[in-house]
Image (cartoon, rainbow, N blue to C red; front, side):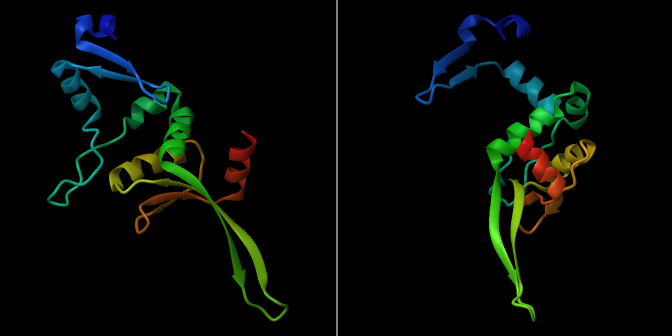
Length: 150
């Protein structure tokens, strides 16, 4: 990073966290301005006035890079999960029981959910953008089986 951006080594602090990961702090207003200009604000939470920040994913750069799938795997690993819960429908022959399976990504920011939906669509993955829950849900059997089988 110091070579790439021409930074003085004293402006980069690297510490190992207790979980084994590295924490890197870069003291550079120029790099911060570059990242915010190029990628937008990284804040996702609402401001005190209730408005969401103007953020976006670098969709075109991700699609051009060829790493869209890997990016989404990381995102779903961090902010996503799996749900398995039983469902039941009454009927004259004793009803029907089945298991509802869902892969989800929790994200309250509508624009980011739209960006994630676009990336998923470009990979041929059918998903639902559920505004009420603040989640993207993948429930199709083909996608679920492909996710499990790698």
